[in-house]
Length: 319
Ligand SMILES: Nc1ncnc2c1ncn2[C@@H]1O[C@H](COP(=O)(O)OP(=O)(O)OP(=O)(O)O)[C@@H](O)[C@H]1O
Image (cartoon, rainbow, N blue to C red; front, top):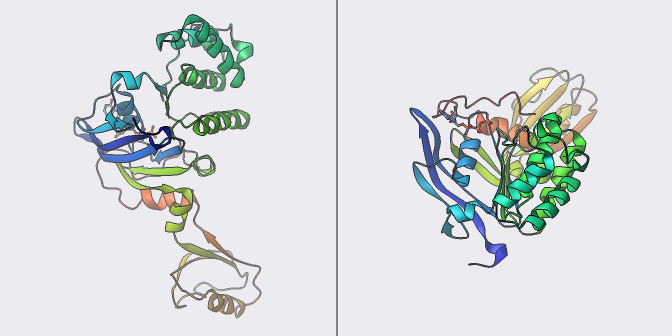
């Protein structure tokens, strides 16, 4: 076994078909101990399928998942904390009983299970509902319990399928804090999300999936840098086409005096400013990098014809 901080979860060229649908096509990435990895992609891109294969609830057609250099086994899987997209709580069981039961199922003693169930319900703000049936809780509170269920057996790895969907901002903060804490303990955390602002804020690295394949995978900063630099120019009197022909500059959009320009490496922004000033006053002139959302839209819409269904659109849930 390697040093704890060197451990990694590796998804190595995993492929999976459902009949004629290619769900995963050589999916490959790794998540390191002590890092939060954001898994993003359009609806149907293959995130849930990948997570199910990591968990072993679904078998890959080819490829391998490894933890700390060795293929993931049933025993390893029992040490993963998993939050499935379809959620998996027993609606009629009480919150506390459910958490204790799940902890016992993972091998905790009765006393440890009771204590862990209490600790995590308090930590996630559902201790007041400890004696209530899960089905009587609001969806957001059920989701808090679901995260508690993923954590209650002291997992070594966390795999969370859309843990933030439908949560109020306070719950988002609580959950983010818990994930940061787990990562600080040296646990690798992978979660999928369509909330890209959250992913941008929380993740050490991000993987963008399209049609069952990883198409971009890096730190948020590096991904944004790869989108190049843009210039936003607000020159209210500038006519359409004012920036055409400026060297190294291409126009990405022009609306009501606001123009977004892409700059090639080494392009002279002062020449752009001079051209803008020649049209009249300039109210705003700013260089900026693409946001993760802009980059995402660009990456997932580059090729819509690849395998899989429902890929190539940014999906309504992308914010
Ligand atoms: N049980 C199944 N039977 C047939 N096709 C399936 C099944 N599960 C998933 N698929 C297909 O596999 C592909 C990948 O789906 P998956 O659920 O992994 O995507 P996802 O990225 O999690 O999407 P979303 O963001 O909508 O949750 C899609 O084309 C989907 O229609």
